[in-house]
Length: 324
Image (cartoon, rainbow, N blue to C red; front, side, top):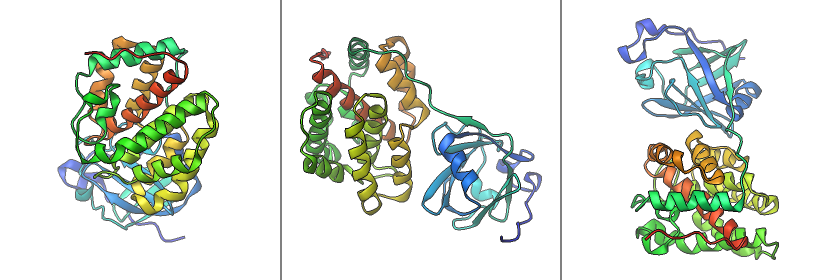
């Protein structure tokens, strides 16, 4: 084991880093499992208010108390305004986990002992009619989704889908995946090669740290983890696992793997549960939260959820009214 670096006290750091002894406060179950199972990694990605640690091919994101919860995220006791680069962090610095501490680079030591696990909220009781009510309420609330990425597919009316390069490239593979979900619910045979090609076409599609096509697939996987079509979900997971490393970046692939186990950003679970249970009163707040996830990532993932839910209703022969 490498020698532990001497930690730098927050008191000696720039103003944005001050705050006392550092501890891990709350973390996604998958992130905590990764931290427990690995003793050596590196700082793999560094942003102003968060950073990723890579343990071989498994990634964990650390941030301050304002970091949203998700399967790979860990909140720390660092102040919300912390700028990690000012605290001495650099890309590729070593990370060591030993004796109840997480040592990050030459600057930071986090106590691990009392971290609280986070898991997504359980889905509410639901039926086809509650799903219909939820989607109809969302359709009335969202007059026009964001005009970038795949946000337009949140809506059930193709005429209201914003036209851009990403939606043009995604329309056909999304149609194929929607039909695959409907066929799975109706227990009709799937054309496996078509679904594989659709997933491949979406992987890495669009700009950003987590491209729009990846976020869409993540939202679909989270939805399919609740809906009773495990065979289709397993097939999509297998295709993503086999193709994503070559077609998207490591951070996005890590989040796709987490979505494959049914877990994503806390705001996605909140809005999905409201849609499932037909709880329309909460939708305005949840839509506001979705709007804060990345540039268009929240909308892209919500689109994957909504396309999946509409395909489920189509299989049940339940029509969702389109708000004019």
